[in-house]
Length: 232
Image 1 (tube, one colour):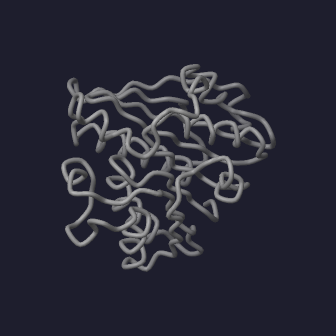
Image 2: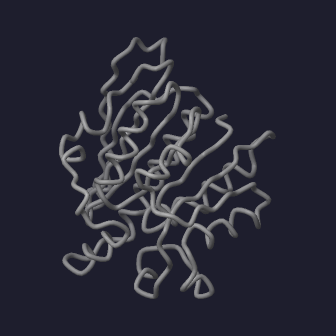
């Protein structure tokens, strides 16, 4: 298992992913991964409809609040109460990391995707949703080679993100326009955890992306493999 698992974004998807992720990691044999939580936002009352936080967490930084949950289960956890940006991405996402990216904007996705291209070995599991649809993309760097391609190749719109794109409050903006469903966050979080489990326990995953449909209760995967299966 990777020595570090980095969860970037502790809101709609990340907060739903955190409790089962902690149970999974804390019950694996030692040595266990260090869990790193990254988010510059705070829990607000409006978050309660779609984010896993308690009344005592309101007003607290999301990463620090969820780190307490992880530590209560005996898991080593580092909280970074910052938004990911060009000044800190290199220190936060490192060689050998498994990154669970649960952000709500393409700017942050593109930033992590570009940085991964400079690493020799790292794994990115990126999840997102749009009301009742969701998807999870997998980007693997192995020996300086991209197994799956990159987010900006699979979805060019991610690479077109601008610095002016909203950061940190994207879900609240969407909620005001068309309310997101809690079940979509849960579907995406579950698919991200499934992907992590396969990488950790089986060493490989037979897909590069999963599409999720909450209305049809369906999941569909597809592959973007660039290298032979044996090199995955």
